[in-house]
Length: 211
Image (cartoon, rainbow, N blue to C red; front, side):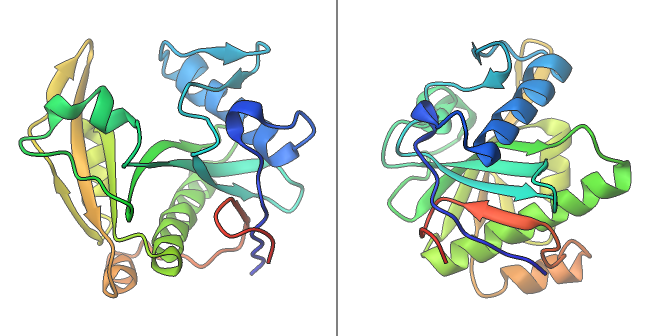
């Protein structure tokens, strides 16, 4: 297992020569714009970067041994502007969970240039990295907005995850909000469902600086 935490620059001002960022933003364009046809801004014709990619955003990026992107997720602080609190609060039956120990998971991205088996492995490793990162960093809860098919997968991962309201149609898509509680049982839950997979890819993150 190879694990490395490295300090990352602010996304909205990411250094063009920072290969992990370049790989992630390019993969996000291929998935969310080219494949899923989301209406999102494109930087320099090849990177998907939006207004939430700012100095407050945090990232987990999985790379293979050659530095190619395999999976990534963006974490947004919920005591400042974020997607669920700003654009999708109507998906919640009650108050939007927020606070200094709550993060919103956004842009959960699996690289298209992988076999189905490799994608599943990268997905599992990123889910585990999210849990381990939360336990290490004092994050108690994750929130998110998901298409209904993805939500059904997330609910089966074995962690404590519940919808925050009913799914609502947005254009051709049904969207729902979700809430994941992270605690000492989260890892065991992933193991029970066969989702837990120790890192074999390199993890690059932005929380703690170089290790």
